[in-house]
Length: 548
Image (cartoon, rainbow, N blue to C red):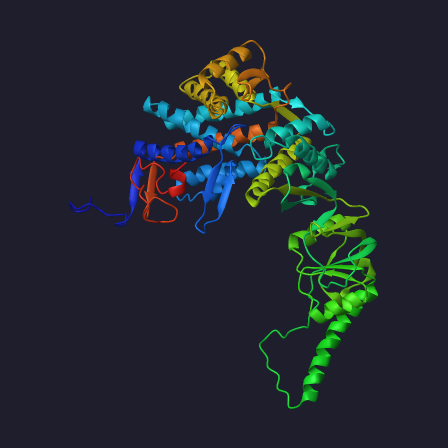
């Protein structure tokens, strides 16, 4: 107050939500995101159809893809989306689990807040529980050898189940394991390093997924620039070029005036001579095959064909980089500096049916997964599932630990957390117990998505774990409790640790906010969507999110 008048410190369009209203607003927004992907969890999870503003359709049950494609402009909701993105970057899988646990943590935290437990006590309890849970994950985990192909296959199959690759998961899991093993090297300290940069995925439509195959080397989806060029070489000198084989143009706009046909002919002859010199440089180096990232002039194509050189233009940058790994050759950026040392030896063959070039180096350290699907939507979802499987198998090889799946590890960790809660003093004990309850969301949702009785199965799971069977998990196909480790339902320990850590940190970040001050509408885009008021749900999450 100043001389009896209120002091205005915020603009007319500014919005402010405080204390419990702010907490309710944030928790509601974050839970809305989590609930939008819950139905996709597990082998029996459902898919989402996402239609963007351009009308492009994506059909998937991959958590991070769904959240990235959704039109979310609520700031709190975007914090939860970051959980999925972090999980994808760090572990490659488990995005839906991480987001679902974060949402359940906030739901249970809200119940504690309504009991007048201060947010800092809840946050401290969640931190204690998260740290203890990750310790217990390591204790429950089983060591796996990088050469244990059967276990790695089980990890791949578990990851792919329910993601469009289920019918051919045995074949595809075998391809995934062989692909990862093909790009794994042993470091000096005895650890294993998986370099997925040396693994490429090429997709094709028109065949069943079971016909997918693994190629040693690269598959380049390009055609020869000239029909008279040879297409097959057993042992070719290959040039990787990032320099156009075209007439050099001036850096600025120029015009040329000619007074006679002779002058025009001289000008054309000079251009032709430039192209001839470029081709001669390639011929003198001894190159048999040229993969060029940029353009090749029509006349240069003719000259190259006459010399018996295979040339491919407009090769994608990613393909050229991959060829560099496969062949062990440098990428030449200036033809004037080209020498025979810049070439690499490899075999190049043409598959006319697939319209692909297969390139294999003498000491190739690169493999290509050629994935087939009946339609574009099928092959896109298959590629997402395969990418997740590649990530979890490579993480398992590097990390060397696995866990029983089917909700087994969540129930076991929850049981241990409840025992641990007895040793925690103060109100934090209630937060630790709430954390344990939140972890049990995973088996509960697995059962719900399979149309099973979640309560009965959760009771049976708890009884099995109390009896000492820490591998007891849910078989959603049979609708009963089984030893999931023996059943081959296996997950990577690193992904589970990351999911628990990300979910806890995201929940704590939301709980710590007690005041929201916005210069306008409470959305990141500043649009006209409703949601500025407390309890506004997703607050501008967009039509797609509300429909899920």
